[in-house]
Length: 97
Figure 1 (cartoon, rainbow, N blue to C red):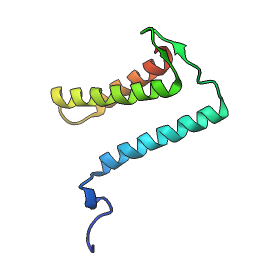
Figure 2 (figure 1 turned 180 degrees about the vertical axis):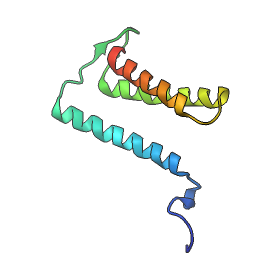
Figure 3 (figure 1 turned 45 degrees about the vertical axis):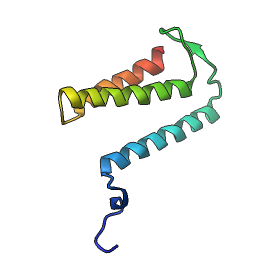
């Protein structure tokens, strides 16, 4: 295995690995948030859905994936615009959904 990188066994790229690290960090942060401030009881948002913190995290991750896919399909690379839209989307989901 001389001369191979750490991620070559699965043909991953560093951005892909970074994404999975980010998802893991989000999950750890949600566990810590729940431990420090229990109370992830459901709340009704603008869509009329009862959602908990975990539900809102899932909606945010899934929505961001679609935002990036649409950005890639319409605009192509670089992805900075998609990232900006995703950050605004995350804020909106955690605030109002």
